[in-house]
Image (tube, rainbow, N blue to C red; front, top):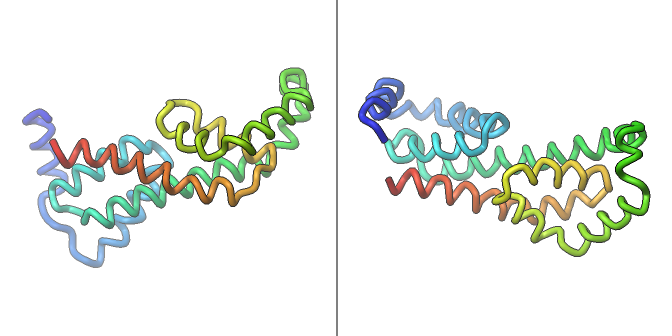
Length: 163
């Protein structure tokens, strides 16, 4: 971290926030994951390093925000998937037999796909939306998503806190 960055952070957050702002910070971190998960996790790691937010609070806020975002992507697929499948462009590319094969594959490999999508950029959005479209039960995503999101948060935060 450069001297300019450290000075900017010190100027931005010069002291420990009062306890009444802890819930606002928690919500701000959780909601920030909807914009950029990686940047939020790194920023939260910096806040933890500076003592601006507790370790448990920071990790829980990031994990909760990522989890809610994942469930939201599944819900988008579930709510709008049928309409999207009826579009001519989509219908030409995703025939019924292809969708059945995708569903069968997800039924067999959901856990690995969900955890793997955390570490393969660009795959998580497609995985959760198509899971909703294919009506994969929400319980499948809910069971595996917290493990996957917490591993991302731990890896991102650990890098920052350790530096």
